[in-house]
Each structure stands twice: as structure tokens, then as C-alpha cells.
Image (cartoon, rainbow, N blue to C red; front, side):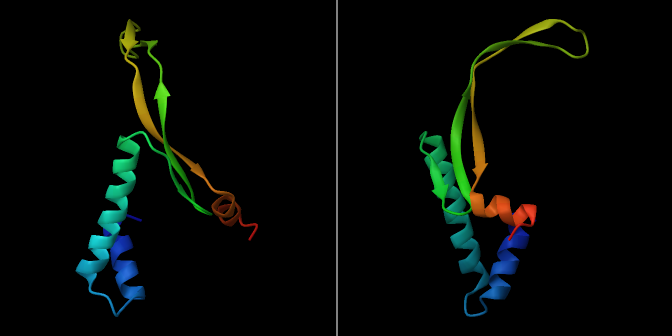
Length: 94
């Protein structure tokens, strides 16, 4: 599902709301999560999961085409850990 499909589905489920308002809410939620991660904070949505930022230290990598050693710089990457309820629903236990 892509963002536009999510917005359409939420607008369909809530006919009393305008689609542009649903879109604004979805964009605001995603922007707040992004902003929190950018600031190094953790975002936890109970039952769904937690977003955080993890540090990947510098390392020595290889260019797959030439086999030459390449230095890979340190970086921070977003990480998502599923919540128990989501894991169980995806696994079919609920």
C-alpha cells in the first residue's frame, strides 16, 4: 500500500471528512515521526511498533564489480521494531 492508497482508504472509511483533511492528517503524522527521528528521538506506537535511529559504524567494504576495498563512512539509519500485537496478527495467531 502506498501513501495515496492509505489516504483514499481512510477517506472512504470516514465519509464525514474531506479527503484533503485526511491527507493533511496523514502527512502531519508522518512528518512528526520523521522530525522526531531526525532529532534522534524514538517514536513508539503501542501495539504497532517503534521507530528509532541506529548508528552504523564506519567499516571496510568491497566494490562488488572490482573487488577493491572501499571505506564506508559512519551513518545513522532509521530502524523499525514491530510491536507484539502486529507480529501476532501478521503471523496469524490472532
